[in-house]
Length: 88
Image (cartoon, rainbow, N blue to C red; front, side, top):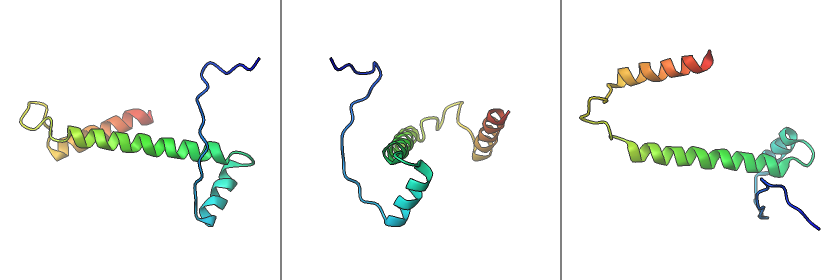
């Protein structure tokens, strides 16, 4: 009887064409038999980043005219403070 792992995700096979130089770099970084996982991780990161970009674009201007609206300088200082907290 074949069992699957509880958190196993369905896989789909695809064909991707990459420049030879880029593929060589992927293989060097991913190691033997690590190419698919490396590419999957890279694609997942890009998909997440694009989803966040779309959400930010959709929210743009939502605070205009509200008490929560920040000047560009206030926003810059706030972002810097959040990054400094992350570094600690």
